[in-house]
Each structure stands twice: as structure tokens, then as C-alpha cells.
Amino acid sequence: MAHAVTEQTFDAEVIKSDKAVIVDFWAEWCGPCRAVAPVLDKIAEERSDELIVVKVNIDEEPGLAQRYGVQSIPTMILFRNGEPAKATVGAQPKGALEKSLGLVEA
Image (tube, helix red, strand yellow):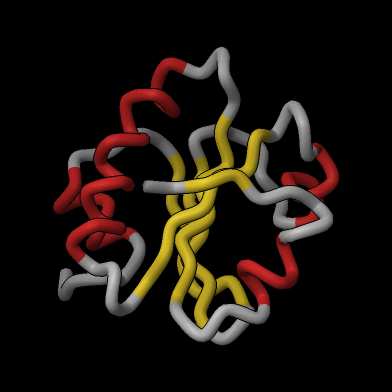
């Protein structure tokens, strides 16, 4: 299950993570964000040994959204070794999302 990160916890939980991290930039009012949340939870559950999923509410943490150039939501960014590796925008089915983030071969 994805949990929220803030400006204060982002570096510790994402940048310094031993695992890959999918950061879900979302907002409460965003329908597609709510639609993709269970898909991300499923990916996190199936890949718990290799990655974690965290959420950034762009209304509460606009600085993080700006820092990573988030212009549309939902935006999911995969971080590996503290660096953004892949990103995708929009609610997608699980298989498409995994391909977009480079978790499976295209």
C-alpha cells in the first residue's frame, strides 16, 4: 500500500532508498489518480522485494511537483539509485503502466 511522502521525508524515503521507488504525483480531486491507485498498489504488492510506491499530493507538496516538472496528473516517476529513471502520465492498465516505467520488456 502506497503511503504519502512530503518535502521533509522525500529525500530519506525516495532519494536514499535501497529499492526502486515509484512516486505517484496525484491530487484528491483527480479522478484518473483515484483510478490508477489500485493498479499501483497491485504493482507494489507483486514487486515488494524490488520496489516501493509512495504518493505525493501536489496540492499539499507543490514544491516537489515543481522540482520534478509535473504538469499533469497522475504522473508516476520511477526512481532508481536516487535518480528519476522513467516517467509516465495518465491512468493506464497495469501492463501498460509496467511497460511505461520499464518494469517489463516492451
